[in-house]
Length: 344
Picture (spheres, rainbow, N blue to C red):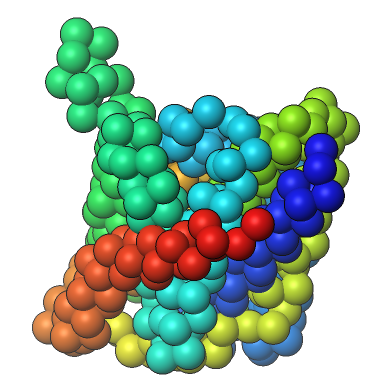
C-alpha cells in the first residue's frame, strides 16, 4: 500500500467510527426512552445498561447484516473505492448530526444507505449500485441490495407497531383487575427487556460499520481474517458504547414523551416488541433502524390503549424526516465526493 492509500484508509475508518458514535447518540437514545419516561429507572442507570448490553451485542454479532450493507456497492474493491466510502460516511455523519441537533429520531441506516448511493452514483454511475429490483422480480425472487434494506426499513416499524398493539391489547385484558402495585414488578422486568433491546441494537447497528470498514480494508488490499473482524467489532462496539453514554436527550424526549404518555406496561410491551423485531431482523441479515422500530412500537401501544391520545402529528413529522434522510445524505455524500476527487 502507498502512503496516500494508508492515509485515506485511516480517514475512512475514523469516519466510520464517528458514524457509529452518532448512531449511538441516535438509536441508543430510543432504546432507553420509554424505560426512563415511565419512571422505571433514572437516566444514568438506563444509559449505562444500554451501553454495556449494546457493547456485548456488537462483540457477539454475526456478519449477515454487514454483508448486506457492503453488498450495496458493486465497484471492484480497489484503492479508488476508498474515496467513495469516505464521501458516503461523511454524508451519513453530517445528516445524523443535523437530525440529532434538532431532536429528530431519524434513521442512521437510512443516512448510511443514502450516503453510499449518492457517493457511488456520482463516482461510477447507478449501474454500480446493487438495487435488487431484477433479483426481486426474477425467478428466484430474492431480496438483495437496496431493495432488501428499504423493505426491511419499511416493514420493521410496521411489525413493531402490530406486535406492540397486540401485546397491549392482551395486557389490558389480562391485567384489567390487577392492583397498582403490579407496576413495581413491571418496572423490574423492564431491566431485562431494556437489556435485550440494547443488545439487539448493538448486534444489528454495529454490523453496518463493520461492513463499511471491512470493505475499506479489502479496497486497500488488507485482509486480517477472523482476527481482524473481531478487532473491528471491538472498536465499533466501544465507540457505540461511548455514543450511548453521551446520550441523545432531545430524541429521548421526543420518543419517551412526545408520542404518547408512557406508563410501565406500555414501556414493557414496546421493549418486548422492539427487541423481538430487531433480533429477527439481525438473524435475517436485514439492517433496520432501532429508532424506526421503537417509534412504531410506542405508537402501537398507544393506539391499542387510547388511540385518540397518540400524538400522530409528531408521527407525521418523524415520517417526513425519514423520507428525506436518504436523498439528503445522498446529496451531501455526492458533494463531498466531488471535492475529494481533486485530492490526491
